[in-house]
Length: 247
Ligand SMILES: Nc1ncnc2c1ncn2[C@@H]1O[C@H](COP(=O)(O)OP(=O)(O)O)[C@@H](O)[C@H]1O
Ligand SMILES: [Mg+2]
Image (cartoon, rainbow, N blue to C red; front, top):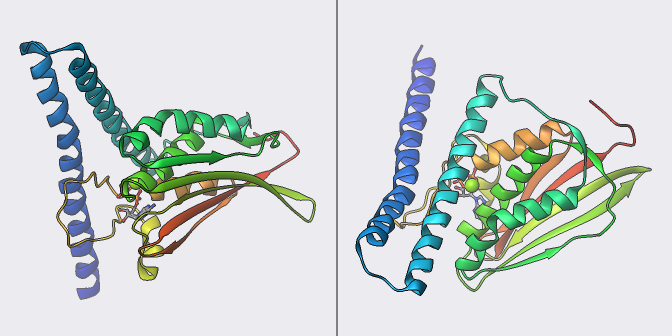
């Protein structure tokens, strides 16, 4: 009985922490969208400033979208209403869409993004939109946990093991890194590494990596992390290439 109570208490705490974080994460971009809209409506500002403010509004709206996409995705996973649209897809197209979606965020943070893809990778059976979401989540994390001046590298490759072909994608950063004892927990739903420093940095919702894992599992691949605190982090995932057209 006591055990059960403890578990319930823990679940409740996770839920209220989650609500707290998410409300904060929704409010931060909204506050700046509202503020910059007001300035644009009222003040007489020059064209350069105007462009800058509109860019901020656009970036902050994208950030809101990413958060809401993740919330929707988890809610669909939980209610068993996540639908998969599997088809033969090109992974380089997935990479391009994800990079296009998040490029500006990384640039604005003054972090360098390097993309090294192998051309003519084989097509594979996958859900294109969900794989784009997955990569956006990894790139978003890399950018959030890397200070200005740092570097993010996205690499794609094909590996053949016993005639079985797999696509390997990795996202590396030169950011904060993740302590060894945290590395297995970060793929849990709602899990975020606790930091003592109070910053106004976007903190996300703790859902991203749980979603990534769900997506990779559905494709029959693997996802894992390698990281050294203070040096950086690499997330790698694999996707099997099947020769048959499936589903
Ligand atoms: N590239 C990274 N570098 C350092 N820490 C990371 C990185 N990616 C994820 N993490 C840690 O894993 C946690 C969970 O990530 P995620 O599930 O995407 O949630 P969120 O980004 O919403 O916090 C993050 O809060 C962070 O502590
Ligand atoms: Mg995240």
